Length: 114
Length: 112
Image 1 (cartoon, each protein chain N blue to C red):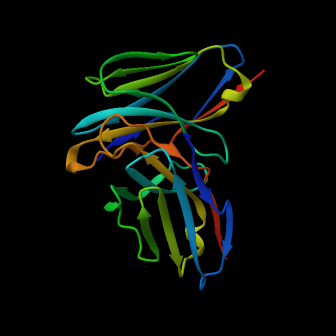
Image 2: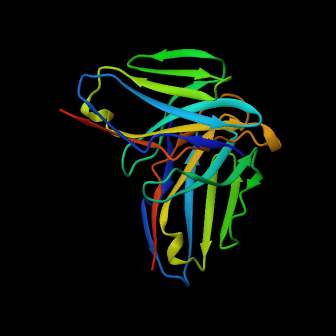
Image 3: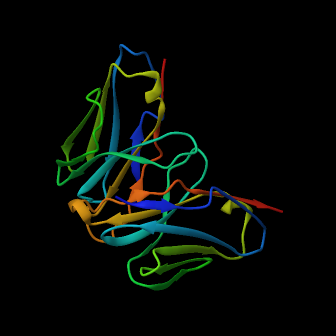
């Protein structure tokens, strides 16, 4: 199983809503990532979890809150988002966060904030 | 941090060969990845280079020159399905982070 799954595929939310994005992998990978990608732009790193601990937070606003309940799951909790937060949110995993380990990406959640 | 540069867009003909270049500046180079991303889909891994030279994988090859801060992705026998964005990602160990940073990507259009 070399798959990273993400739910939901699409999400529309208002600026006062609270929602969560979910990511799951069963490859035994110990590093998991959240990226944000705008149209025609490269993925921008948001958070990195290594061995279920947050290792990198790329100065992301507190309205985005990551959570890693176990080694297979990664959540991104959303609250009081702005329209400019509309983007494709990609989850990825890799065997580790060092070494030549490629990242496996999920299909993404297309988020629209109204 | 890294300064990664790729052409924005390239076009090529089905059956031809195309080379997509990537130049970078880092203070602690620690590997370079190439990913393919079709519109609306997730990136998929193509290749990894950490030492100088050419890595070949079927129709795709990737080359690295660390002294020149330069890599290229070579696609042979182009097919229509190769139309996609190609992302160069560079890992820099400076600052203790080993996470690759993505370049802006090169949009490749393959026409008949």
